[in-house]
Image (cartoon, rainbow, N blue to C red; front, top):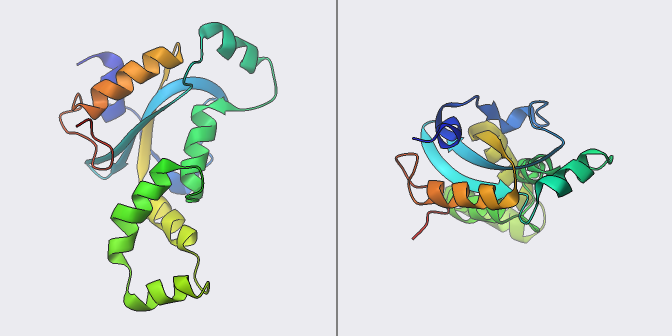
Length: 159
């Protein structure tokens, strides 16, 4: 197995409950794997279209870009603009809700996004790798979605 891909299965694992995680660079293209214990839940990438030159330019600025912003979005639990949070909501949180919880959500007495955030923080962790470009990240993400880690991700496998 390629060293970069192997790091997505065997590298340091960080809990979303500890977000923000200082190990995640402020500016980077890369790939990440999200886990519920030993179950690969999701694989994603950040930095689509980023070149080495663009990444270097971003590093000289003060704004975060790439992996940090993507993982931060996932850690928030907010569904708006975050496909991972939508998948978690639909496939992992919603099936666990009681009729009373669903009713409270519909009456705006309980925020669904708060339940999603709690699930992510209580159960999920991630690993990540930096890549030299968005193109490299996209290739690795596709390999992992296709089963390069010995299992396909639960929420977004390559068909």
